[in-house]
Image (cartoon, rainbow, N blue to C red; front, top):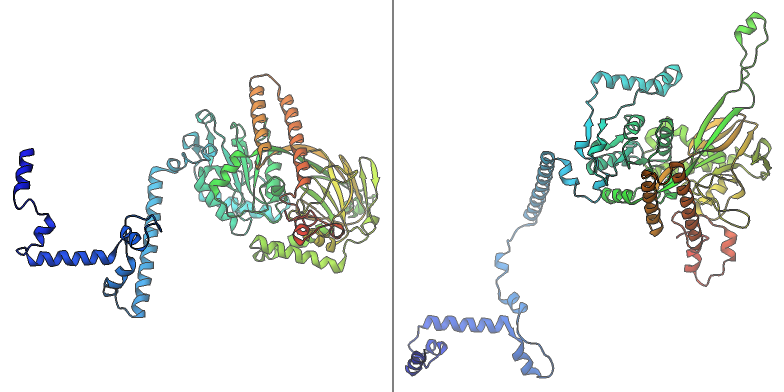
Length: 613
């Protein structure tokens, strides 16, 4: 190697570099010209940062390397020669063509994805999702055959008869008991499975009900989702009653939730599953108390199902109202009159209703009754939740001038735990509350002095009084408070004249009667887990379930421990709610705002008076 190197260095050619050989007089002129032009272009388009720093100031900058001179490239490169010179008409045509091509490509891709999903099955995509524990695997379900066209026509006829009422309607009360599932194999379920049974009222929330029905069926086993507009809930509840760790989600308003809870009472199951709420109605007061908000806010269905999976149970009192007519009907007995015998008065009729939100008597029920009658006459006007609220407010404003329920203290008597209560003379409405949310999120009860904490599981109702429709409007905007009467475990209300009433937003006109209100049972609901307290309740429930399964404690002991745990968690939540504004707090008082000592407008509007927290 050393010899070769020495001979190369000794040769006359080896002593010259490649650059010197190219610049020699005998070199090719074209090659020299190309090299020169490349050097000029590199000096123009590429900047040597080392040379620039040395030329300017050696200590001014520490930049090293090379940089592309974009300004020179833009000035010297013939970019305009490649831009097509089109007229505005050609540009519009090209834009429309590209847009149509993109839309068509998207449509084709969506069809291909759906085709692939149909070939591979929905379970192929959903088994890896975060809410996979809520999905019922297809191998655990036996699907029922579709109903024949004759059965469908019969169901529609019976539904029409039920709507018209009468003895035929009462005979056809159970014709819609249909479930798309024949049986569920519980042994094939995974150990950590928590199947979710979903009931959707497709007519709730305007067009939102239909959208939710399709979205939930695409994120779950389609057989888990039941449309209450087409069939009743009893068959599906009976089928899932014995499935372990089953949960129920109700997508609808407070009336739909009451329907599901009432059906759970009617069927005989040893352990009732917890019920969650996806608010699609107008008021959604129960959903607000349970932490699900006042309405669906365009959340991802998959994220919503994860929240249902992480929700913790909570108890809800359900109250029974026994209504007895004070006076028998005055219709004469025609057969007795024809025979010359005295007509024996019939026995007073009794009926029972159940509520879990509130029972309203007077002015608030009058607005609900007008709203209900107008919706039955002109359903096309009620196509969205916002329209429903505006019309509800218009019906309430009508009573500001009429005062149709004035003088309520002269025709109603209230006995709370055997003690007669005083009704203010200006009262036009009486409300018995089980939850502290009314008419779309208004807090009607605050802990103050001798008044205790309002709770949905303490076995007591809160009795308040409103002064009229104007007072209800002030409560809705948070500038006044209702008049608190008392809290009681048993209430008797004696009504001496016909007056409108409503239970959880379902109104009717009630003649003179006596109402006895007492606790019926407790329902297990699902409360949205937003803090560590909810996770603690979940762990406690799992531990008690394990102890009951291992025969360490009995089922009554488990229920008693969980009731006490729920009570303490609810009390702690109430204490924290007094320190900061709640999610659905909207009550206030003008007097409190005027007396508040705030140094700025921001402090005034952030306080508990307006309840904007």
